[in-house]
Length: 255
Image (tube, rainbow, N blue to C red; front, side, top):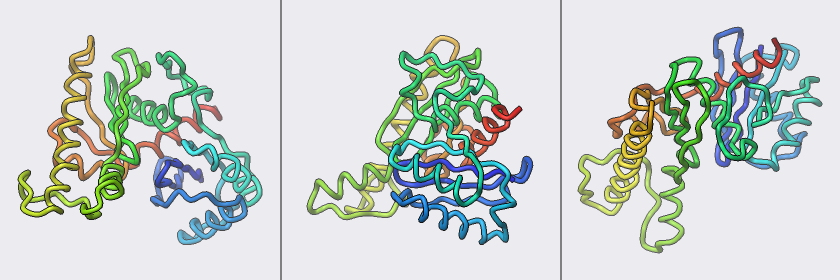
């Protein structure tokens, strides 16, 4: 079985693959822990599915939190007796990266692009709704072209709450109308419909680029399902796309 982990700034997505089947998945808080804490945490996590460390034959992870890279690597080595594959821009993935500095591209963005290309073809736009909203673009030839990055939905709410004394924290629920009848509804309207407009506008501009007019839009990440309800450009929601990409890369590296 393969353990895959995608460590983001706010949450970590984790999953276990038994062959091609994702038999377990979790979305957890990304908290700085020692390798012992992480190791015990992961052991307890897999135990909830009746699994032991010896059931795991491989581990792949991607991270955008450098301070967690060493603890995660050591936790896997000490508690699973495995050397994990840490996916980054230097990993041999078979995808050409057309950015000026490929090494600065976040590992999760590369993973999303690879998984999206293999599952849905190209050209392609992958929108990942997490701490940030990222739009990653795969060319008609299958290369990673780059994309766009904007603040995430929860990041926008937190910024309002921290900078405006009278504005409350609110839940991400879709209001009945774009015209909010309360402060809570007004914030929900601005965040949700505003980011739907951001999504639709960026997608339209990407599709206006040469060769991109037929690009599908795949949404992933914790808020993907919610955004698909308010955006008119999202074609498919694939919530665990990043985990599948990690599995694909692990298999390619270990061919």
